[in-house]
Image (cartoon, rainbow, N blue to C red):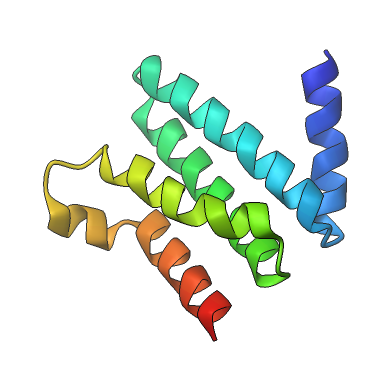
Length: 106
């Protein structure tokens, strides 16, 4: 499958620190997270969103604009999964995105 081949290649690029590969892989993980949520696989969806935000954070820290712009959008998506704002503020995705955005602002 072409998508799986692309994911394998993006993974290799992401491991080597390529911000474009990190962002592409993060986009794929976000898409898979949404699919997992539709299939009621909450734990898988949460794991995939965390992987995505880490990859976007890595790319953002290298100055990749698309990744910098993706972080607030991920927070919007993440917030939509919580009824309680305190639970949202405790989520690993929230913490990771916040740290990445703070580092990027320095």
